[in-house]
Image 1: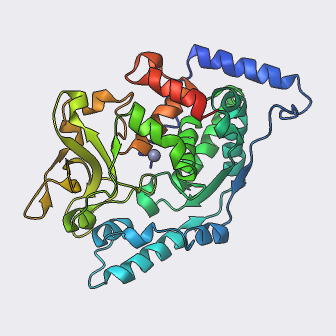
Image 2 (image 1 turned 120 degrees about the horizontal axis):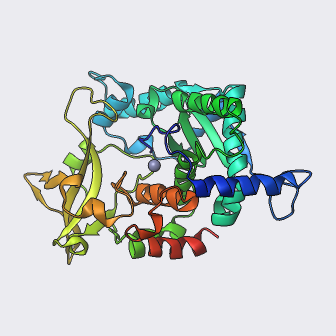
Image 3 (image 1 turned 135 degrees about the vertical axis):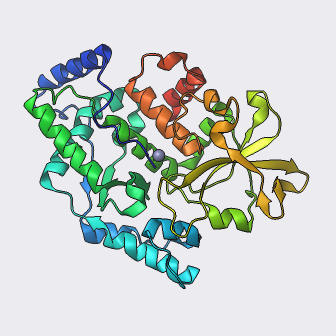
Length: 356
Ligand SMILES: [Zn+2]
């Protein structure tokens, strides 16, 4: 999930421009940009609507099977009066399948161009990304709250984002800056990180635990209130992570989670509530701290020291998101104080091995 829409922001730093120019210059010496045996062309696919719809109905995909009614109302922008939960789960899948669109030629050229121009940097900074195929699905903006996200090995782009890539491409082309612009890279690396997290969870787990400080709860504590209010993040479906407040000067543990306000048809993402649910470790396992079936919880950003613990405070409601935000910045080196941010030496030490 990616709540940013910032293709137009983040002016390139001098350092980035120099690096990109050097990469472009070195490529220009080759008869074929990816002709070197050391640099393979990235594999990039754009799914046709029928293939994209089929990708939402894979038998091993439990995404819709775990959704609650409140969440389905938000996704379908309807109160679904009188509809059973089982019928609503079928309806929301059909709703998403009906939202798939074909990419335009201009969008394909633009997105493929960002991936191909980024390939030398990925080869250098994170070879795992350079050799992982890219696969894109386009959805109407009404689905998934209009947010870029991932499903299986696919990056799902809302129509508006796909169009932004085409507009950016044309602007940069006309300005003579296409070869050196870094625009669009952060979003693609963020989403591809989720694809990699799903493909190889064991690779990323030490980042979440040893570096970020989370503990995996097995099994994660649950109750009816939480499952009725939770909004499943397709990019972080396992809400199973406890954070020890002792790391930030407190005591006890919180489980970050995203829930929806109790409304007839809550809006996505406007009615999201990002919370820290109190959990405790007992001899019988992890338990929710609750009162009359309602878990004790706080807004996550009201927990003193939580945001500041991580390299970046954006989307720190799930380790998958913290990793996607952080690794995008680590690969692109697009913030000047990157190495001085919290946890970054440990992130870099993990990334140099795990993303090789
Ligand atoms: Zn995300």
